[in-house]
Every structure is written in C-alpha cells, then in structure tokens.
Amino acid sequence: MKAVLTGLLAGKRDAGAFTHPMLTFLETATGASLWKWFASEGELATVSYVDEETVPDGRVVRYQLIFGEHPLWFTVVLANDGRIAQIRWW
Image (tube, rainbow, N blue to C red):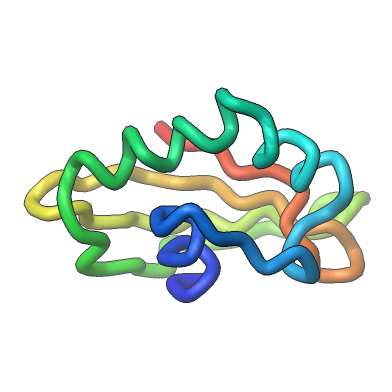
C-alpha cells in the first residue's frame, strides 16, 4: 500500500491497482490536486495497518499515515479482485 500511495503523492498511478471508476477520479483536476495537498503536509514517513473488515463487495482496510509530523487516517476500500475502489481519509 505504501508504494501505491507514494506513487499517488508523486503524481503517478499504477493503473492495475485501481478500479476504472477510481482511475477516472484520479485523472480529474480534483483527484490529482488532492494528492498534492496531502504531499504538502510532508514526506510520507509511515503507513501503519490498523484493521480491516470483509464487506459484500470486498474489504475495507484502515491505515494510519504519517506525513512529516502529521498523522492522518485512511480507509481503503478494495474490490473483490483486490483493486482499490475508494480511498477516504479522516
């Protein structure tokens, strides 16, 4: 997961890692600038697994990310085929 997130922060994306709707979002101005905003918090230092649950359409996996000195919590929704369908932060 850290490699995928590091790529997004650098403006790159592994097309095989995302569902088509997620790729479509990442190609929008909002989708691209969102990762620039996260990158402005500092270097991605840590990605720590928190927990996960199985849902009918796949899995929901939660992580704590540390950008510089700023912690953020991300929820990644994985489709049944393992591709990223959503990324949410809180």
